[in-house]
Image (cartoon, rainbow, N blue to C red; front, side, top):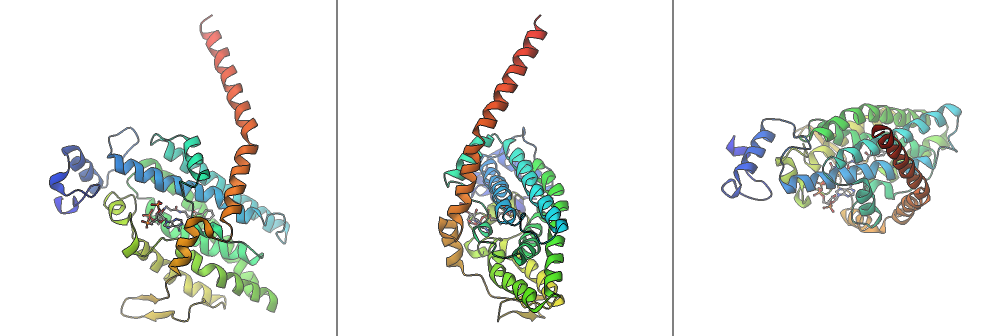
Length: 329
Ligand code: BYC
């Protein structure tokens, strides 16, 4: 299928090596690429960047919600939120493991995050101000995450694709619990409904930003899609998210904060306003409302945990020495 072998790392087919052509043909046939198999350096680097950022998003993403565990309104809500936040830690760990199969260490991934050389999702640089934000985060943020991650179950890199299968199952529960909070609040007192609407107003555009810049400004989409590291463009997924979420808001009597929102019969989807892309790039540059707090919390956790990592290594070394002694007796 040479028509599909358009480009590898920006090269035309004539410029590609036989290995690169064979690799692209495997991708086009829908084969999974496994860690020890040959892959172009650009493919490896793109995966490390995307999987690493994804893992960091899961880990940093615990912070805004963990903030509410002690303040959840009932024991049941506390238990649910606690389970959700623990799930996010698990997702981060699967993703770090998937990235490690590409030849980068966990320490290096963490160092790149802490030094600002690797990103995490822009959404987590916004604060969670009220309990209704726990509903809006579950509904919108996990909802956007699933929209992006369901297609990634078919991504070309085996370990990433398998991690996504498990993660998506858990994300569905997360989205549902968020929507359940919003349903309850929207059907509650005047003040509870006001809080739910306020959370939607504040988090709607940051949720749309999660899908990345519009297609015309996306740097990596074309190559990532040729390699099936991404399965859809940023705008395709953003449109699907809007089409799915608007009726859910209407069902519970909330209003999406977009005066331009309108069903477009011809395209079979909603017309909607783009997020403020200047704000998006500003958040990416480190100037969002919570960037410094989030990164500071992660660096502190890493430093506070140093003694534990050292103890684990010392224990592992001792155990290995004992096993060696027994084996050579
Ligand atoms: N935030 O060329 P583009 C979750 C960067 S959270 C920050 O389109 P790409 C969770 C992008 O990295 C969801 N940075 O890039 C839910 C690139 O910069 P670099 C996490 C962003 O990679 C609840 C530049 O902008 N999900 O799961 O083709 C609780 C140009 O963009 C963002 C994933 O990570 C952003 N929103 O497309 C806890 C899914 N958007 O790297 C956790 C996997 C763009 O060149 N990732 N940038 O410096 C992806 O699907 C893609 O990486 C993206 C971006 C769609 C996000």
